[in-house]
Image (cartoon, rainbow, N blue to C red; front, side, top):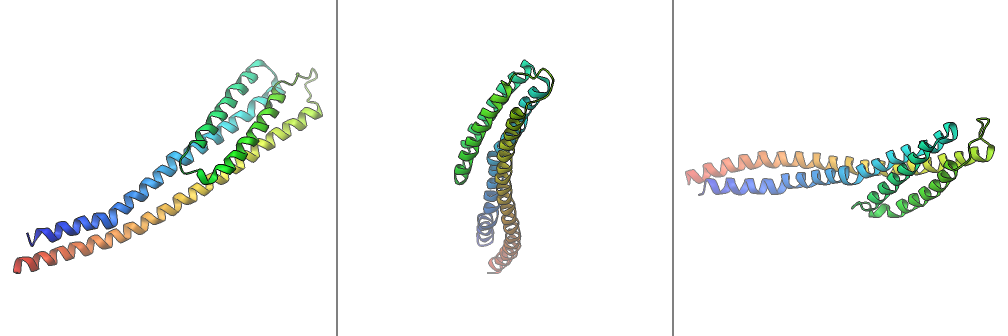
Amino acid sequence: SLTILPIVSLMIFVFWASYRPVFHSLEKVIDAQLNQIQPIHELQVALINAVMPPNDYLIHGGQEEKQNWMKLTKEVDTAFQKVFSIQGLESDYDILLLLKKDWETAKKQGDLLINTPQETDGCTNPVTAALMEDFDESVDKISVELKQLTTRKEKMISDLYSEIEKHKVKGLAITISSIFTGILMGVIGSIW
């Protein structure tokens, strides 16, 4: 008992003091990556895809682009809903509300573009060209804000990785010292 009990006690202490914080930090990293950054990335991709149908409609025309626009706007709306349901983004909720409002404005611009009658000479009138520019700028603004949000989340992950590294070094020191302490206590216990 005097030989084994100290070693078992030290191993339990080592796990609790050094490895439990590492596992906890890793869970935070995985949560941030999967539950926060991934849905924001999906929203960015949906926005990029949604920009194309109005552009293509003005160039080529056709019902297919109108159908694509309807489908892709629904994907963006769904991606926004998913982002709003993310735990951990509560501090960014105001920014997300503004981005959603900007998307509603861009969607109205896109609806106007996609319902613009085709020009017979292949040229786009100045009003439509200006609307297209406004639409592109609106979507670009949303994309930039989402990129900044992603950058902040990536920095948080980087900070968590630094915390994990500190825990690993501390854990290694505690493990080595506990092994030596356990051996020393075992020898002392055996001699006693």
